[in-house]
Length: 504
Image 1 (cartoon, rainbow, N blue to C red):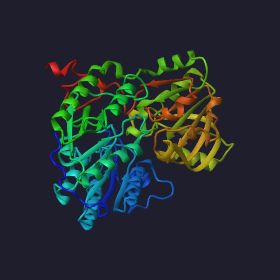
Image 2: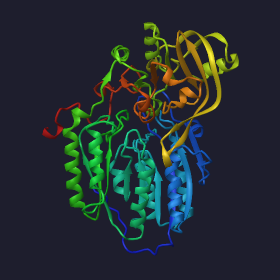
Image 3: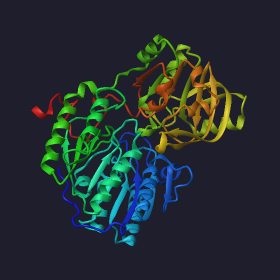
Image 4: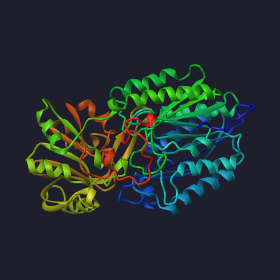
């Protein structure tokens, strides 16, 4: 695939107008939770650039776009910024209303010289497999072929033909956990600004790696692979390189891993480089797979570790991938083993939080917690607990430096049952930071075992304090054994369904 639109001619610097918007969520086709208006409203929904003093992580790129444009004396028009905690299919009317709001704002702002979008890349709505492609194509129809359109994407995206055909430049975060979204936003801004001024002619080339997977950039060989991509950028006409990891729990035909190379009007060289990098990634496929273990093996390994705390990631119940965040499988196994001096965060259970808050700190009560959303959540647990902490409007940090933001947990409580501290909260989210423990009165370094509901974003903050990190594949809505996912619509001519699809 090659991007067909590009700008031509010079535009006088100082006379440009940028249009900015964000519409983002990640859709898990197997999640039991629909993504409706209330999800966006609870997570992040603002208009006209009113991001507040503590904007969510996904508003950071838009703030950067505004600042960089203002530093050049350019004007900006800011439309909707909407992000929903990942869940199931977005309600059709909600997607269409947000899309049309952005398009109406763009129409009123015309003429504009560039469009900068904060998207995810894996948003699916009823009737729309490719919300981002649909939105970008509609933007293209309004602005015409000569105005550059750029979008920043999560690497867990579906890099579709429609997106590539209608955008000027697409840039994915390079890191997982996503610690570089501000850096990638700056990269995108300069790509689009240079194109708007006629200084470059971005051409996008994409190679389909014919594989799916989960790729941690914190460990080898993916760590060195990403470092190599960075070394190639800025040389021989290469403007940007991205890897679209894919989102394996999005059941659409174009789901899969792809490499994207953007060159300065060198499409043939870009296509050759994308293929070389893509085939290299494919050759690494067996080494890229994280070391997932089942619950019993994970607890056995944790007990054998010298030092503490051991951090277990409950990857299958990660709200950041659309899971409910209320599963009880690992907690039940810990209770059955009589494990003590351990802590779990966070179980999403607004009902249990409300009851515990009413009871108050120090209260002893019987409490049913977790297991609310169906089979992927397990059974609820009936426990005799002590309420050890009650906290209102709790937040946790995610990211660092310029990309640091606060993520809301909502009201939260800590309860203790049989020697295990359990954090319950009211706003569904994954566990990013030890804040989830410390703000509820739990010192994570005084517990030998910590269980966090997250796939990998926890790693940046927890690895520095962990004696060891283990990834446990419990039952749940994000099972990491990809060949066991009940797909109905994907193209299966890719690894791991086929050992070598290039030979087929």
